[in-house]
Length: 82
Image 1 (cartoon, one colour):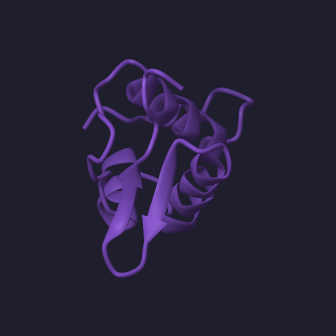
Image 2 (cartoon, helix red, strand yellow; image 1 turned 30 degrees about the horizontal axis):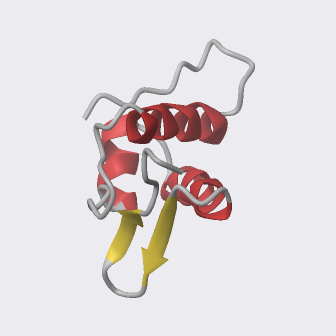
């Protein structure tokens, strides 16, 4: 994974992460139906907290890019045609 939080920026970590993931979804790195990394794995890779990842995922859910499936994780529901 390539997600990194730039601590020197004034932008909150969850917004930085949200923006990076959203851009990857829009650019087609994650296609409709693909599973996103677990919150714990992404937090470890981005060197941030699980709560930060959870907040980023929640915004993506609210905006219709992903959905949470209980006990399965987060999946992309965005389609290029939308």
